[in-house]
Image 1 (cartoon, rainbow, N blue to C red):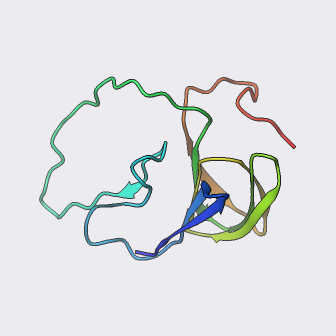
Image 2 (image 1 turned 120 degrees about the vertical axis):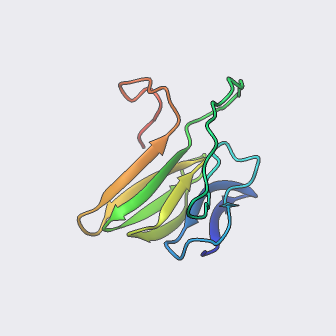
Image 3 (image 1 turned 60 degrees about the vertical axis):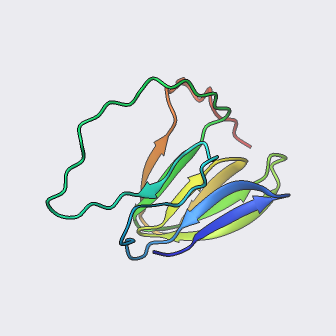
Length: 134
């Protein structure tokens, strides 16, 4: 498994990038426990089972909207911005790379036909009420 890259500003993580690479041999979470999105690989051996379960209604207080973007096909560049809208980093992403955006802002330049799988916290407020363009 490839190492997790962090984009930070003044010690605060704005985004994580997980490059496409071989899957780990054992369950491994890549984001730290305190991250508002838990992202990891869960590994099971053939013939094992995932016991049936329900997730308990644990109340969480989350500020902001974190999202995960998986490049399913193509290539793009992501600009990561700090809270004052200053450019912090530009990172190239390609098929299989994963961006975990947890703070600040971001924007993309698509370098070739690209498909991004986006996962973010809901519920969706509609009409762009959860973002500000700059």
